[in-house]
Length: 280
Image 1 (cartoon, rainbow, N blue to C red):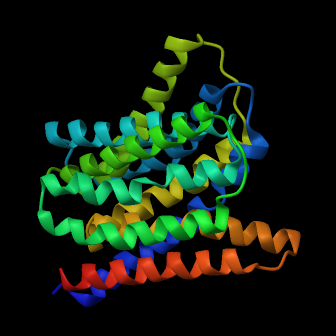
Image 2 (image 1 turned 180 degrees about the vertical axis):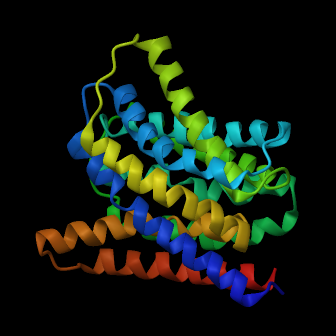
Image 3 (image 1 turned 60 degrees about the vertical axis):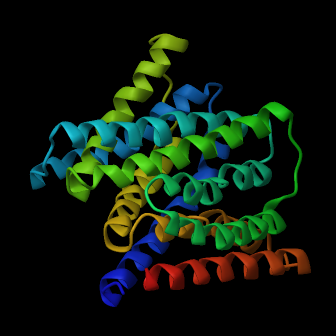
């Protein structure tokens, strides 16, 4: 059995990361420019600004740290976020968010290459996805929008696998630093390759990067160090739920039966996954 206090600290950090990430979809939507790549750079800049100071902690930055840290950053925060930002232009935020969080189901399946025990997390992950659909599954979109949201989920699932390997070579501080630097460089390279050198920074998307990637990202990386890869990743599904709660509160709407069942399903799935992780 895991050290309970350390494990619970990891769970608390994952919840805190979800809170930080909850504001980003709203800021992405209201602050979006005409270019998803410009928004990616604005977002990356927020992460980069808060990641650079971690070099002062002198984390190990060997070949393995850069390899897997870079894969983690490129697959998820760069390409995965870019795909998600595109999906928001072709599908409503609710349905795009639901599909993009399919990584909570994909990750336990991918982690089978490491250990068959990770399959036990698949069924609470499916329960979480059902809950997300009940809460936010409304809205319309095109096939392209759905496809890009699913592509985002696939890319993020593999990025978490790279993150799992990165801990073998460096500390969480090293992962955070490599992620911030790679994210900035990767976003700029993608922008130059596709659209050229002219960049338009969005203040709202930059703020989303500061909060979600600059604060939420490090909290998540630390949570994985304390509680393992599976449970903290499933807990990140709280993020769109919190976003929806904030939206309902702002609009002063009452929860209907469908949404209530969705909230119950998500929380139940997370609790079950956390108990499985405690026994692992």
